[in-house]
Amino acid sequence: MSRAPRSLLFACTRNAVRSPMAEALAGRRLSPGTFIDSAGVEPSPVNPFAVAVMDEIGLDIRSHRARTFDELLDCSFELVVALSEDAFRAAKSFAAGSAAAVEYWDVPDPTLNEGSREQRLAAFRSVRGHLEARIRERFPNMPRLG
Image (cartoon, rainbow, N blue to C red; front, side):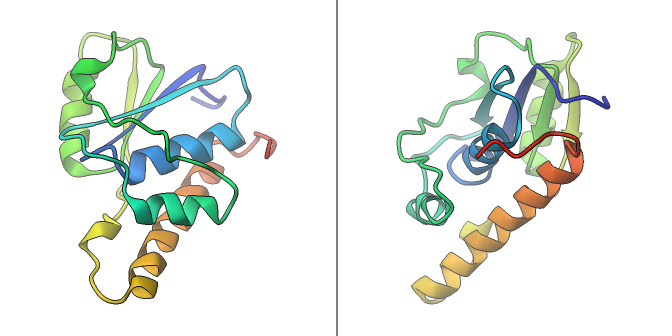
């Protein structure tokens, strides 16, 4: 797929850190006509550290509501990007029988990092930077919108 997809789904384990961050970052990069969503295997509330590091760059993910693949109406996405191994397995199942392409981006889970508040924030910033770079690399010809 050399052009940006018209519909894009990011998926991770809990839909609380990586996929909502990717959803917001892609929303800033891709055209307003692109439908972008996210889901998880075992959803939980958005992580406060994810909220904090996204606030740093002017993106507010506070109102994100985590959900499962089952809560999505259908797989009408052109591209599903899994950000964890378990999400990759679930995404392949979710997209089976549809025209959706499924990609796996190995993105570390920053919630596994322990330490001080600043050390934990640094782990989340690192993941944010990793996601920004992957989105820029995957969709190179898109102008930055925000």
